[in-house]
Amino acid sequence: MQAVGNTFIKLSSITLLALSVNLVGCQTFKNLTGGKDVDAVVTAEKSEQAYYNDAIAQIDKGRYTQAVEDLTNLRTFYPTGQYAEQALLDMMYAQYESGKYETAAASAEQFIRLYPSNPQVSYAYYVRGVANMQGSSEGLKLFKLNQAERDTAYYRIAFANFQELLNKYPNSPYASDAAQRMTFIYNQFAESEMSAANWYIEREAYVAAVNRAKWVFQYYPLSESVPDAITVLAYSHEKLGLTDLAKEYKTLLQINYPNMLSADGRVKLNTKRERSLVNKLTFGQLSRFNKDTTVSTGNYSGATKTQVIRNATQLRLPSDNAANTAAPSSTSPLRLTNDNSRVRLGAVETDSIDMTDGN
Image 1 (tube, helix red, strand yellow):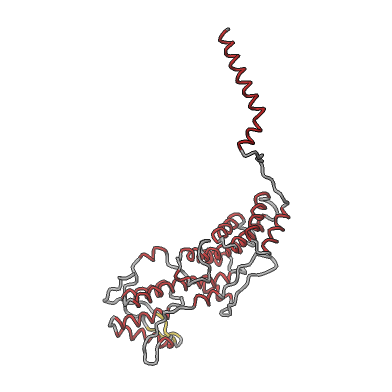
Image 2 (spheres, rainbow, N blue to C red):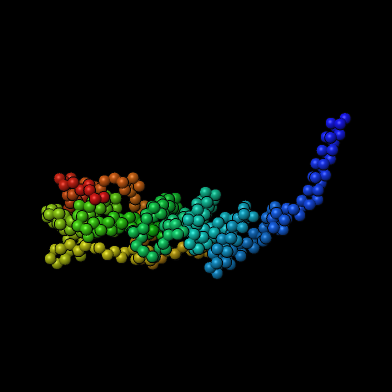
């Protein structure tokens, strides 16, 4: 009986203690949290329509951060609502305009994954490429320096994004602008090689300069840098004492690019490159998706949209592994073959001099 009594006394003490905690528990919890009540469930403060209207109003005023907040709340509280998909389209635009390029690309990727059958999905493909083309959110703005001098990782991703857009939606209103951006990126990769070639020439490393120029022929044969590559080959071979090879490259210049030779036959090296800004000015400006408007086509006035798209689909970038391989080892000039009164570049043949150094 004593044992039972002790047990009863212990249980009674515990019960009393629990009751006392229950009576003061709320106040104690408030004290621990600074005297503020904590809501267990967060509810929407506005209707779906109100969130969307407020977000668009913020976008119109250029207040993109607030717009992103409203659109995020809309998708959080109304994930299956009538504005959910459109909100994500507007969100990626607002994120881009606020300089959050990586976030904008991620939102575009999310839209592609969640709504692959949405009629406006090509816009998401386009925004993804444009955002990746800008690089990281801490990166430099598009117009601040020669992009050929930047890290090319984001350019490679953007090129693949635009390539996928053209393959899947060649009739998209964003296809022609994507094609122009692909062409620009392709030319930037080639220009990067030529920038390196000129750097070697300034240091009289002519073998390395030849390797860079030949790299352009191998991987960027459709680029704007091909004429400059020929000038580097002609100039470098002349400096190396390979006069016969230099003369043949000069013949290529004389027939195809006579303005790159002086009156006395000297090669005009193009060490200052100003094409980047001109090319960028042809881009359409990224705009918020609106069913009643079409994408800007920029200032481009060259080939037709169909030609631009067709030409862009022929472009290819070398793989990442290609950059780690040796440069082309031949030094003999490209064969001269007549083609409609112009000379095109034929196959490269081997030569005795080793050009594998100075990559």
